[in-house]
Image 1: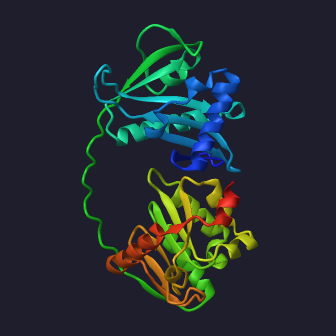
Image 2 (image 1 turned 135 degrees about the vertical axis):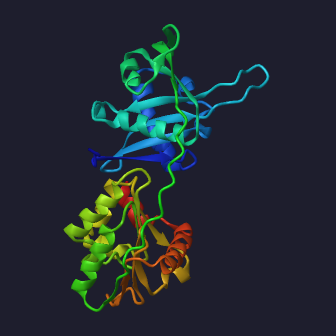
Image 3 (image 1 turned 30 degrees about the vertical axis):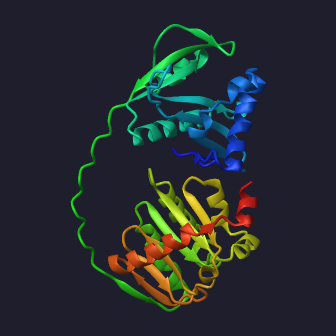
Length: 331
């Protein structure tokens, strides 16, 4: 069961907000609770590590961990394998799967990077937790920062090459000309339901009659939680309107920040784009020439036109950013 009372992301140490969130958790756990000295907690590895950050439903940081890349041999220093460390969860969130979520995410990152071996300096009391993930002891117990530790290792099996799937059968193509609101809502829901792992939405005000319904919210949540790499990306030209209305899709996106992403255009030509559209990942789309009206065209399978719309969406996405209104709501 995927928890929805916290969310996990790969943090960007160069981003002030992400870095301070990770530091806040580590300071509370290691420096305040375990009396580790500042000079021993912060090191040069933070800048080149991959950090995992967990936030609660209100956006508060509650857990973190890092994956340190391997180093090559250099004068006076032997080569070292990749390592996992700085695993920290705030007291009130322990034994609630936060630590397991962090570890699973770090292991996914290590496998994606094809690291063959992971090491860890594990606090002795946490050894059973790490053994659950396959780590084994490597050596005798010792003290680090006046806390009992033991080295642990995990050999990662190389990822198997995925089987090349057979090309999907071409479905029967259906084209629907949308003329009224109920029809638009029905076809939008069908388009989302047909998605496997991804939905893309380009909208002026998040169209509450299409996306702020129980059925649409449930369908989008199903897509977002459908597996590794799943997600819903939304470009909103005017986020103030849905914020004022208390649009429930924004609230859902802020609870599940690892799978829902929202951005606002900054370029005048993108803000003035008059159309709106929805895409799924099975080559279906709903396109409205005027985004303020429901009239438009829905096609369940149109690879050519779908590719054009998706490419345009990606271009606008890259030059858009999270709006200040949405950023404040997430804090």
